[in-house]
Length: 318
Length: 215
Image 1 (tube, chains in turn orange, brown):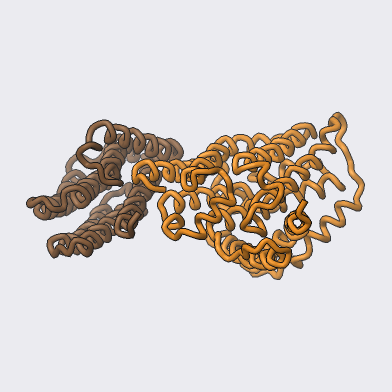
Image 2: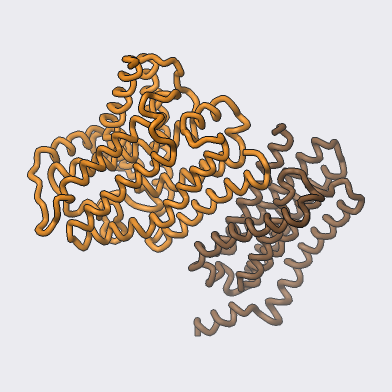
């Protein structure tokens, strides 16, 4: 087996694992700036994580074994996603051929479903509330995701994210095609909803509108740490996919060497920081929509995704 | 796809997006801005066609579309609605954004199927279905909204669809320029005169309901 490729593989997994808290930290810090606060250090998530891992884990009475096991299984799912999607290489690394876009989506779905089951298993009303809300909005989010996959498949003729990346890098007309622009817009709206940003969700404990926080209500100690880490990894992965496959496919070094992959980590970080900066600006300028209006927001994202496939049908080109 | 068609396709999809926006918006001011943006995109499309076909007629038409449809009509409309007491938004649409957005997409797909079955053999060029889709969007807006002001905006969208269809499919026809100018005049008359008569004489169904609520 190619040693070089294996090292790149490990490097990519390590990038997602170790840099995802940093991304969350930078995001929190910049958000604080837009609110005229100095905010916590960008390394705060690492400190939080260290604290969670040291703390005692308390399990609610009546919770099953799932309560402690599922966060780790979800963690495994996110780690697996991190070695199958284009993050620091524009060429497929060894495990990439195991799944396509749909497979990646199913892995995200598996991790999400486990988090929901854990929330229900805890027996807490708050956690169940968060879970039921998440599911009722996911009923609009998931179809969008599926249609986004269709649109990507329409553009490239395959469901492989690496092919999409290469095609978009090579062809300006594919990048500027209505299908691609619309699907990028739809995916961006979905991204905001999935990583819990405004206008869908406001970070922090606000009990009336919480989705993500609600589900973690009963967890503590190591399990909570892992669940938080899952959230950061999910944000990192979705942002990377959005950047590398949809919005900014350019800039990655294509040589299959370790050094090129290391350089690509820098490229990715620059892209991610720009995206996070943009998200902070968006958060500073728009208000949260009411809980029952989130459905409208997701319906618009779904409409955009459908229109992207529609544009292909009407215009006859991707 | 060659760059010329690509511009036409992008502007067409932009027009389609404004149609989706109009369907899901309930406030009147953004609706007026939305239809103005749609007209502006139409003007850009006409300008591009004039440039590629080196046609002074269409160039004048593009200028006329931008001035009349994107500036004058929205301006007159905004002045007219100031006199309406209940002018800020359409009440019933506010709770139906999801339904309206999904209905718009469904109507677009149905319109495309109908176009494929009927007119596609006559107009085989890519994107020829878009004006037809826009026309159905305007019709849907007239059918689903009960506020007169919003219905006028739906009507303007239909006019846009007709101009769009003419630009894309029949720009070389002799009467094209005259018909578009006629539609411009009709639009101005509609928003300038008929709307004020309606306001003074009959009122709108929704207005009556709101007056009752206000007591």
